[in-house]
Length: 199
Image (tube, rainbow, N blue to C red; front, top):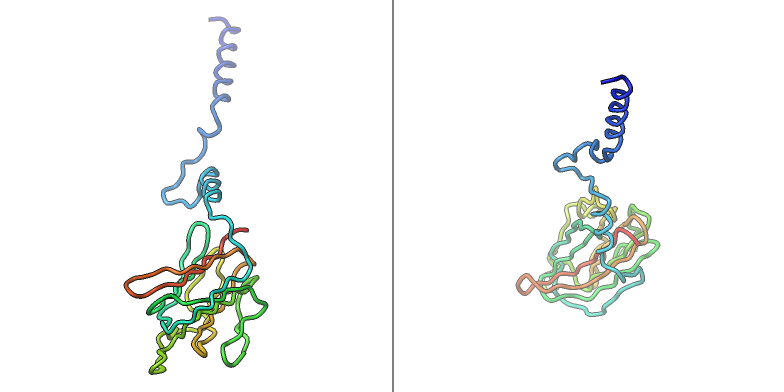
């Protein structure tokens, strides 16, 4: 084999290596990695609920069903707040405000975040007959731990007065939300507030 032929084979081999797709050299994904392919992220965003708004939502129905718990959870498209009620579902008034105030005293409820949602549940957090509290948070300034949530920044109890309960929710920005009620478990019910991660 002459020198010219050897040189031609070397050049061809080199070009073959350059033709291998860059993806072949990419590091393999680690098990449990939180880094998702771009296409997965696009599909997730596209499938998020649409049509939510940031204007007040209200229902005037007053009930005696007491508030028994307040919970939060994280979802793919939104952060969720759930108010558990010991009976039929209550009305509500959920709106963005400049400042959330405590029921009765009117004191300001400090909240972290770029925007504040005032959530009025048309139900007491105490038994109307005995006056005994049905919901007593360990820390009224931090009802749940929302560290790591994409939208929620702080959840605070603003008191229960004259048959209704107020909650302050600090969020990242004035983002769209929705409000609805769910029956159960049993004869109980739930008030649900979802706040979206994006506009």
